[in-house]
Structure formats: C-alpha cells, structure tokens
Image (tube, rainbow, N blue to C red; front, side):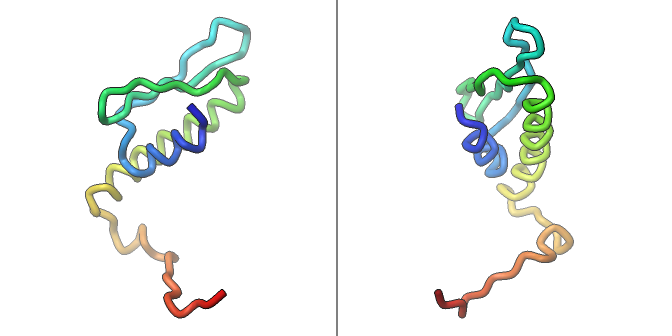
Length: 89
C-alpha cells in the first residue's frame, strides 16, 4: 500500500493498529497496519531511517483520527484552521 494512502486512512480513523516489521534484509523495514474492517495492509520495504519517520506520522495520525472521527476535537485543535467561503479562483 502506498504510504500516502495509509496516512490518509489513519487520519480518518480507519487504522486500528500499526507496527514496524523487518523485511529480512539489513536495515529494510515496512509498516504493517490493521484497518478497522480487519484487512491487514503493508507498505513497501524501505530503509529504517525513512520508514521510522513515516511510522511516527501514522501513529500520530491514528491518535488524531480517532478524535476527529468522533468529532471530539477541541477549540485548541481547530485553532488556525479557517474556511474562506468567499474565496474565488
């Protein structure tokens, strides 16, 4: 699975768990995630330094996704987000 797609699923509350797993080669790892429908997905193998940063992002997105999916966001979380309905291209 593409990393950006997995990040999007995590941010929207569809990833229930994620872990780093070795690919069996030196310094190559992948992210294995379980989705809310029970599907298990994994990313391609990458260098540990790169995939570990992505894993941290997915972990954070999972936390935020649970909150956003239930609409339990606070005013502090929403601070800085603005909507410009009158904006014309």
